[in-house]
Image (cartoon, rainbow over all chains, first blue to last red; front, side, top):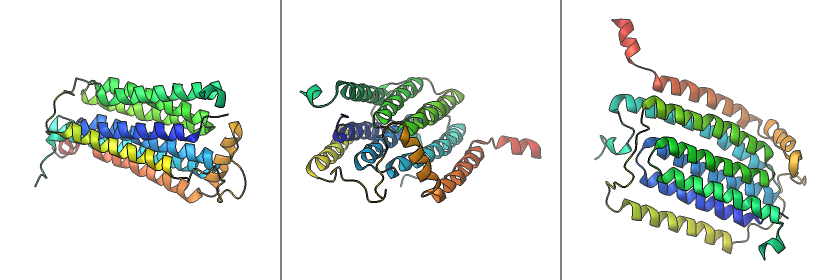
Length: 101
Length: 188
C-alpha cells in the first residue's frame, strides 16, 4: 500500500517554504528564479498527490500546463536578466532601486 | 510500526524522494556559487520526479526530467556562464536589517498554517471526483493514455493556448536579449 497523501503534502509544504525563504533572502536574480522553480515544483507535487487521492486526471493536466508556463516564464525571465546585466553588469536585485520612492 | 502499516518499498521510495528534494532545496538557497545552486536544483527536480513515479504520474515524471532538468536547468547554466556570474555571492551579508528573521518567521507561519489546515480539515476524503464521470484514475502505465485523452479533448483549447504562449515567450526572449548595438552599427 502506498504511503498516505498527507506525507507528500507535508513534503510539498516544506519545499514551498524553503523556496519562499530563498526567494525572500537571496539577492541574485538567478538564484531567485531557481527558488521560484522550487515553489512551482512544490505546488506540482501537491497537484499530483491530490490527483491520486481524488482519482482525477485533471490534477495531472494542471501540472502539465504549469510546466509549460514555467518554461515560458524562465525563458522570458532569463531574457530580462540578460538585458539588465548588459546595462548594469550585475544580477543583484539590490541595485535595481531607481523607482524607490 | 510504519512498515507494518505500509509496504517497506513505498516508505523507502518516499524517504528517498524527500531526502533528494529537501537536500537539493536547502542546497539551492544556501550555496554561494550559482552553478552549484543549479546542480542542487537538478537534485530537487529528480526527487520530485521520484515522487511523481511513486504516485503513478509516469508521463509527468518523464516530462519533469526532460523539460525541467534537461531544458530549464541547462538554460540557467547557459545564462550563468554566458554572463560570467559564476563567482561567489556573499550569502552572509545582510543589507536589510532583520530580513532573514522576518523571512524565516513568515515562512514558518505559512508552512505551519498549511500543515494545520491539512491536519484539521477533512477535504482529503478519498471520495472520487465528479468530473471524471466515474472512471477511476488508472495506476501504473495506464495513466499516460488517460492524460493524453484529457489534454486533447477536455483541455484542447488550453493546450492550443500553451502553444501560442511558448511562441510568444520565445519571441519575447529574443527581443529582450538582443543586442541594441547591432542596430547602431547598421546605421553607422
